[in-house]
Image (cartoon, rainbow, N blue to C red; front, side):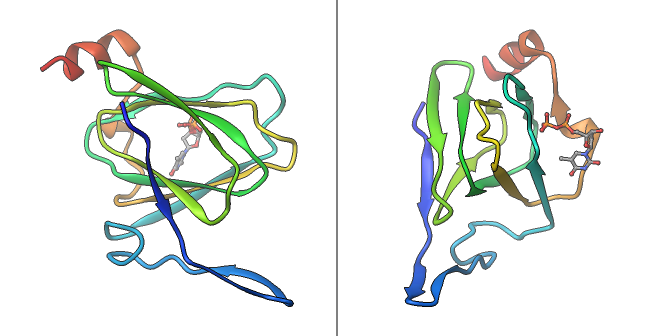
Length: 132
Ligand code: TYD
């Protein structure tokens, strides 16, 4: 599968850089939730789930990690290491994150509030649903 990146406009001068995120503009959905991960130890694997409905954009605001996208038919692995770039993660995409740099701050913008019922945490169940 293809990884869909959004390149954010970066405003920069000698004072530093700035990126602005606006829903329905450079983020293609209403932002209902923001969460972020940090302090992820070496060797840790996160994610390992898909969402039934949720749309997300993932941004490595600082540092880097590896990211696997799997739509049930093919897999793509990308590196997130650019604070001016967001990775779009659609519903029914199994995803995993690992190889976090010590300073990694991984931010997610989501179009819905947290809902455990929206998660598919079993890979075989994901494959059964993805095949439809
Ligand atoms: P988890 O889904 O295991 O994180 P990851 O996908 O990165 O492996 O979530 C970790 C914990 O945080 C879990 O107890 C659920 C909770 N959580 C919330 O309460 N709200 C949220 O928006 C998210 C993403 C997780």
